Image 1 (tube, rainbow, N blue to C red):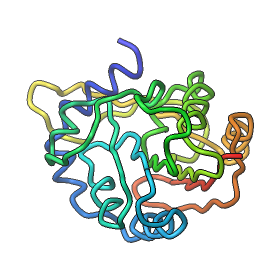
Image 2: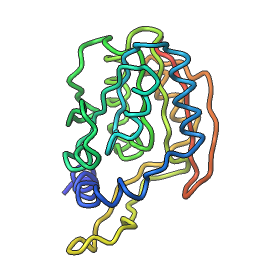
Image 3: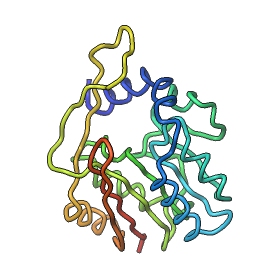
Image 4: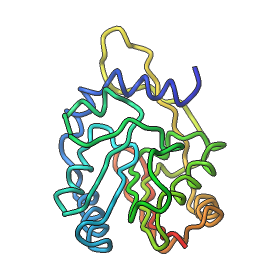
Length: 202
């Protein structure tokens, strides 16, 4: 079982618990959503990639954005019953070229193997219009690793998720190659060290 399949299976198994555990959206995420909505304006087309149950998708819609959530796990998509979500791989989005004004990708790119990152970022660039906004939140650090899932799921005691850690310099270089200009970043510590990156498609 490869990294993507194993990680998807883990999220599918914990979907209901995950949705309950992350019921509250942290204030710094709300600030990021407000900032993106302010940049794009009412009616802008936004993809929430790796949306999980769709809590961020709902918040984007509450800010008058036309947001669609995409996730590999059907169970995660169903956990909150958020309408208008699509089961899809962020490496092959069912979206037309230059169809989006913005992409929100929080705590999802960190599950993409490092060898697949150029393809993922190229796909983001494909679906974004010129001048479109990209917001990423990734785990900061070095290397790649498997982590045990911190949820008690009967019959699934050995669930693990695959994580890729990022540094600003290397991620910025990959974004530049894909056609993005990084213009802002910041860090936040919660249960892990987070790196938030703001970029714009050239």
